Image (cartoon, rainbow over all chains, first blue to last red; front, side, top):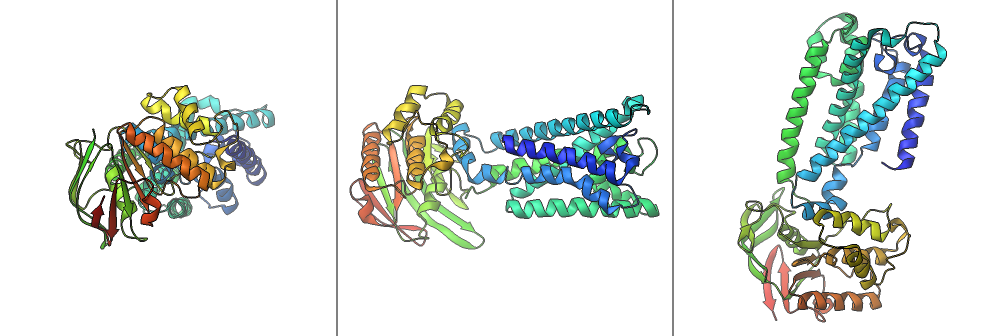
Length: 240
Length: 213
C-alpha cells in the first residue's frame, strides 16, 4: 500500500468517527462499542453511509489486487515462483494483514476519541470479553467480504467485482435492518455477512439477532469455501 | 540443451478456436521467429508455451516434463508478454531486485550489468512510471535476460524501441543464443525477424502453416 492510500484511509477513519459523533451520539459517544456498533436496526441511512465509508475504502484499495496479479506484474513473479497459487494466496494473506492493521487503527482512533470526549463515562473496556467478540467479528466479516471481491476478480473484471461486493454490502445492511425490526425470517441474516460485524445486530449482549458463535462458524466456513474455490480457479485460469 | 515439444495442441475460449492442432519441436541454441497477421495465434502460442494458458487438448512438454501435469511453468524461463508491466513506483534497479529475490540466482552486479546492457542507467533513481514506452520495453528486455534463462519467450520485444535500441536488442538476443538459450520471438512481419531468426514459423488461424530456415 502506498503512503498516499494509507493517508487517505486515515482521513476516512477520522472523518467516519467525527460523522458518527455528529449524526448519532448514542453510538459515537463510544461508551459502548464504537465503530463496531454498526448501523442501527432502524436503518438510519445517514449512519449507513457513515459506517460504509471504511468498507468502501477497503474495497477500493483492494481494487484489482488479484486481477493485476494474474495479468500484469504478477506473471513475472509467478513464472519465477513456478507456482500458480502460491503468490495468489500470499496476496490474500497480505490483504488479511492490511485489513486487520487498518481495523486496529480504526479501533485505536475511536478509543482515543472516546477518551477525550467522554472522560467521566463508563468505557468499553468494562466488558473486554464482549469487545473482543464483536471486534473479531468486525475484522473477519470485512476480510471475508474482501476475499469474495478477490475471488470474483478471478472470474470478472475488477470493476464488476467491486460493484457486486458493494451492492451486496449495502443490500445486506438494509435488508438486515428490515428483518431485525420486523423480527421475521431472521435466519436470512446468516447470508448477509456485513451484519455480522455490527454489535447492534448481534446478540453479544442480547440486543440483536445474530449469534456470534454461529457467525464465527459461518465466516470460517466461507473462508474455507473461498480458499478451495480460489485454489481451483488459480490452478486452471488462463492468464491472458 | 532445452527442448520444447508440442503435440496436438488445441485451445478454445468461448467456442472460438485460438490454437489449432499444433505439433512442433523447439530446440535450444536457436532463435525461432513467429510471424503472422493480428489474431493468427502467435501470442496465444507463446502464452501456452509459457504455461500461462491451459490447453483444451494436447500437451506441451519441456525436456520431457509435461506442462500443467509435471510442472506449472517451464524451469528457468523468462518472458516478455504484451500488457505486462513492471512496477511503476520503483526505479529500474529495484524492479529487477524484487524479481531477483525469488530465484536468488542473479547478483546485484548482474542486475546492474543487464540494465546497462539494454542502454539504461542502473544508478538512475527515475521511477518506471516516468519512463518512455521505449525505456519500459528496454527494461522488460533486461527483466527477461538478467537471470540467464534457458528459454526466452518474447512477444514483440522491440515494440516502441528506437532504431538504435532495436540493434542493441538484436545483439543481446544473438549473445543469448550463443549461450545456448532457446529463443522464440513474435512479429507481424517476417522482415522484422530476418536479421535474427534461424527458423521462421508462419501462423494463420491458430495453426502453423509454414516453417523455413
